Image (cartoon, rainbow, N blue to C red):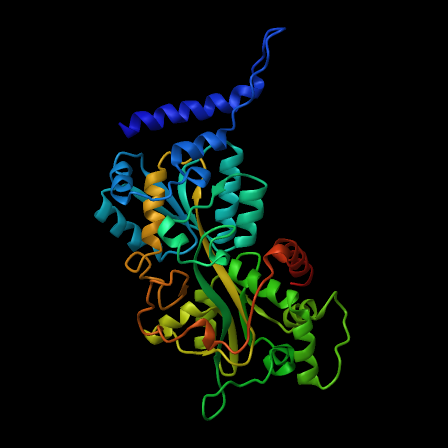
Length: 389
């Protein structure tokens, strides 16, 4: 029975973790310490022990015998998907929806305490996930179904599977008769015309906003070019680079810092034009449903590409459930709440719904984030934001 195997494995992990504290009698050769993570990977059949061909019928049958699994997610859209998954496979998966920063902190604390209640993690900051949860700790393990490995480029699987991409972009209301974009350049947001007329969520709370600020700072050369295009002269810096300069001027222009993207959307909808708000492009689906009223900027201001990773929690006692869930979440049916609002990496998935025609190619300026610099830049942005907010 799987439950018996799981109980035995849990005892094995505990015993392996205790090995360094055990003494050995004089003259007795000390055996090589076992690696708990390697032992778990063998048990879970992941990493170097992932079969070349995965038997999904066998995985589904094994999942039904495993303990309940908890999925941590930074998006509430996963709730109906988890319910569907349980109905289809007869599993017991629960979901906890918390912000990206809270999710990452929770995983760190649980791993450091030696408890592993979750099985799958879907979050919004790949740099933090990789550095703090996978390099500093083995708290998460990358898992990609073999069938997806055959069709995905390395960038969507390394260092971890990307579930989807989103674009951090701008919402606006216009005071122009034709409703067109009421600004020419992102630097115009720092002028008197837009004083107290820009809203965004703090990068200290939002992974998407942090990605945007990191992208602006990382692409400071492009920000310098845009400055000179708008003001007609080279920028004179009072900060480390043009990206930080833009952040400082935006904050000093009475930026409205909101608690959530929903609050940003409310502010844009209910304020006199012209007004701008920053968030993910996916919120535009609520404009199409009539909940909000604004336009999506795909032409003027830079948009920043954000990856949305998904991974297995190391040492989970329900690895088959986790594999099955990750596979389901990246499928056409299992990813339905996202496809069309966000951009799937699975090439076999088709975007659906009223936003299906919006693609990454729709954005005239789509800037990327250098993953190798993202964490250090994120720390610098956080310190800078705290200083000037």
